[in-house]
Length: 141
Image (cartoon, rainbow, N blue to C red; front, top):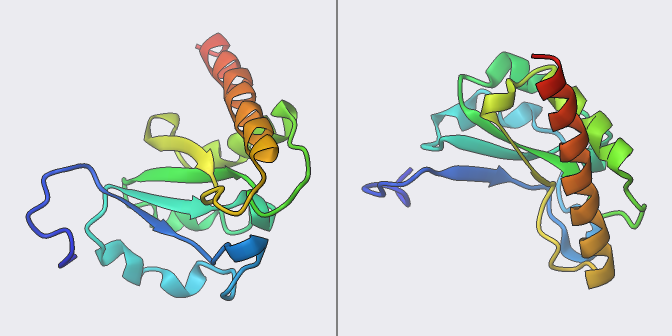
């Protein structure tokens, strides 16, 4: 909070387990961070879910606190070729605990150590998966 004191902007806080060369550096659980992390001055928490098979998404139901969620629906650590359907399934899972108007879709983390061809494929799958779910949501109205 000291680092953002006086900053007049929408703030996001990313909690990452490490990604150097695709390897995690820490125990991959958010449970120890909650509820303490809610004291952070942040409008949005940006969390990785895809690389952990959507584990701990349900924590958002308990601790979402009306904030926005940057939901990681693309695994940046694996070389698996995500399909739009894979991504859509992950998005639907996050939407079970977070309202659509509070959700931003993003990769789990940055692509700094990933080959560019893989980044392009995964971001394309993210866009296509979001389009599938958006179509479902607008049809349901």
